[in-house]
Image 1 (spheres, rainbow, N blue to C red):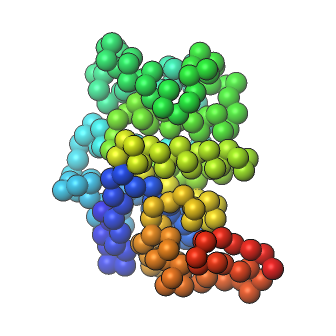
Image 2: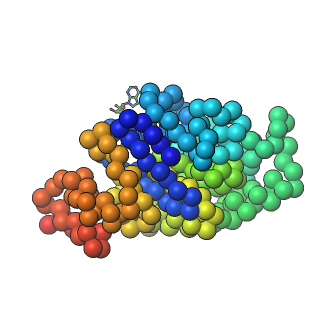
Image 3: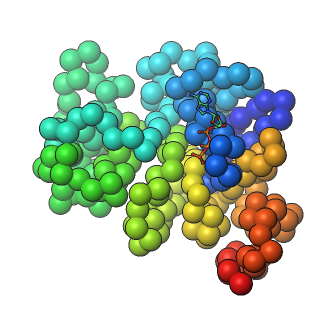
Length: 238
Ligand SMILES: Nc1ncnc2c1ncn2[C@@H]1O[C@H](COP(=O)(O)OP(=O)(O)OP(=O)(O)O)[C@@H](O)[C@H]1O
């Protein structure tokens, strides 16, 4: 849950929430603030009953993981080794993996369908493959909350659909709270359980149909040459 004087929104377990808004409205800033990568100017972020500003880093890293668009500088690692870094909050100073840690890493790799590339070097991966690896790392971290900043930005159209359906499945089947920012409005409308729409300094929180019915999607598109169908949540350029 997010609270401040102007913004108040909740992302729930078992749901995929998409954060949308025009360029520069503050999506990345909001995600980075929720993940405590930058200090909050105002308001508070609660995970369950815990205000994240009061949590020790080790506890926060067991509750929340974030997948950013930047590639980690670990080009010589294998995919499996990188995913295993997700176990860091549990493995202590030396980072030694137990049999249970290894099982969790393998399961995370299988969950995102990248078993065939487990032995590949990270530097050989495409952007889309890298996104899946970072999601597997996040799964290995076993956090109830996963944040992703524009995970579909560099993917081709089928890749975007695959990734959104993967995140939807992880939210629904593994009861994760998944919050991601995206500019892919139509894909978000079709796959998200809820939307957080940042516009005019406010955050509108609701299901895609609720926000569509309240006129927020039309306002966000803001073009007479674009027809938005509230029933099917589809967009047509006239
Ligand atoms: N390090 C920074 N220093 C100063 N201003 C910043 C910094 N980072 C972002 N901003 C500004 O804060 C505002 C929000 O930026 P942010 O990157 O959060 O937006 P965004 O919604 O993610 O944008 P986009 O969709 O273009 O990625 C913008 O006006 C941006 O210029």
